[in-house]
Length: 127
Image (cartoon, rainbow, N blue to C red; front, top):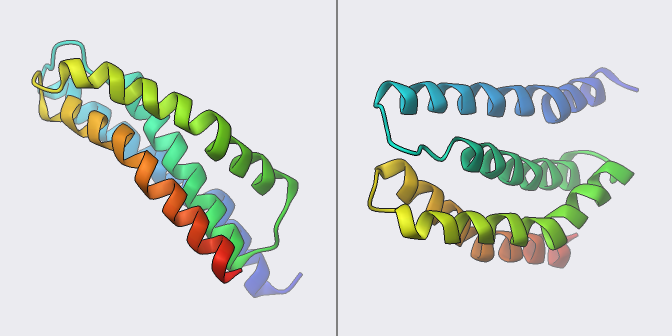
């Protein structure tokens, strides 16, 4: 492995997930400071995880070699992701008036059904 490949692997598989986790933690702290009733904490964890998998699959496709883990991520995006994000959109549709975080969770769940097919389709066409 060359130095560039090692740096690319570290950025894609280590740095990006750490940044996502830290961003999630900061968001949860902000939500808890604002004392939101019934905050969508678990929903945001699943949103971050699902969009994180999408980002990692995209970066792996562009900058790295395809692997079994990338295939598992794609499988999740196609089979599990719509179920998880559909439940999140449904649950937060009823609560979207409670706070801006509920509205954000609702929109993130809803837009998954637009963003993911477009992204995967574009990568299939150009790869």
